[in-house]
Image (cartoon, rainbow, N blue to C red; front, side, top):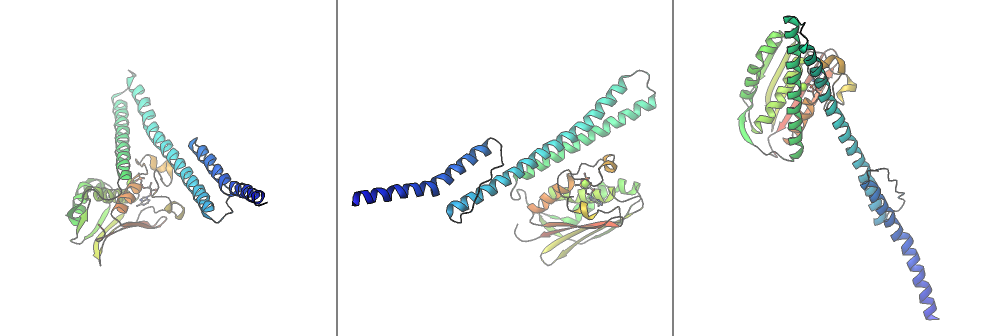
Length: 295
Ligand SMILES: Nc1ncnc2c1ncn2[C@@H]1O[C@H](COP(=O)(O)OP(=O)(O)O)[C@@H](O)[C@H]1O
Ligand SMILES: [Mg+2]
């Protein structure tokens, strides 16, 4: 009697454990195999609240994150290819034109200028891509030095003087004597991008205000312009890689759309924040805040 009874109980237990433990694990294993083959569509029905349910839930979440990052990677590669392709196509076209013997000297000079412009565009694109790649690998700041932010800004203003003078822009500059510890080279890139953006997107005769000051335990840099501004719709995307508002108009200005995403990464590495305030047609203000602590 006892023997039969225990046998029945054991068989029942084995069946129950098979149903409740083994079968979800088999499902998970199959889902893993699917993901390995690049298929992220693994719908796991999870109604259970126990450990296995939690495992299945976090597995589904991981699958959807993987899918997102794979999509982002593909979009990035597509963008890079496109950005590389367009200058190359135009360079090839102009090189062919230059070979024709009936060109006037003026035409020749014109085509050569386009060629050199496109080469510069390619060079700046690859430089920015390299910067992004090296920033992607950095989790914390590698190089730290103490330097004068004010002197850095003065240098930048001097370096860009010819272009803002040419565009007849007024520079309203207020720089406090601020010393900061961080990666000077990377921060210079941030300021340079914010300033070039302000100059690029402000029509002739506009005003650019630069304010560097210290507040409690923070260093604040504001770059404001009275240029074309950014719409609310675009504001949400300008820090994304390759995002440009109004594509066609900016193509000739040499926009790539990587500057702000690089800047954001650099500011993140310094545990700071970068934010934007803008009204379409009225102007834009970028504010960078760098904490002195946590570095
Ligand atoms: N000061 C500004 N005024 C208006 N629009 C701006 C300004 N700064 C950035 N933007 C918008 O954000 C986009 C992304 O800027 P950025 O990442 O620096 O790329 P890029 O300078 O190569 O266009 C720009 O194409 C532009 O549409
Ligand atoms: Mg830029």
